[in-house]
Image 1 (tube, rainbow, N blue to C red):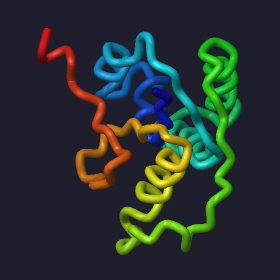
Image 2: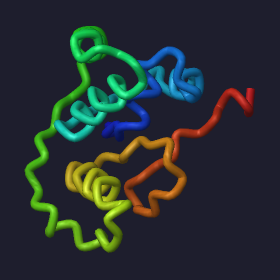
Image 3: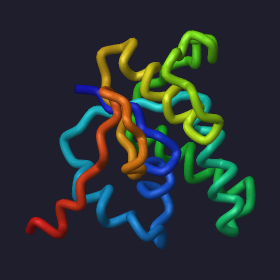
Length: 129
């Protein structure tokens, strides 16, 4: 199974002081991952909002690509192809879940509010240990 990372999952993985960094890292091993332009750009935006410079954020993202070698999927669907988009607040979430579903993948997220069959909440496995 390949997991398309949403922005929250990618940020939590790459920002060491993120509140869900440990949660994502416990869940991470042995999985196959993918990113797309939306998740890459979202990471850059959020990392900078959290205090990184653009240069530092780009370096972290480049290191992730080199070390983890995630698959890359272009955002090749039109927004209107995602019939489930009924709210502006969830438009990107539904788009990403539809993008993952079109590949037979799951969308890995930390957002419990995404109600899409292809969206999977990253569990807090540390609580279960």
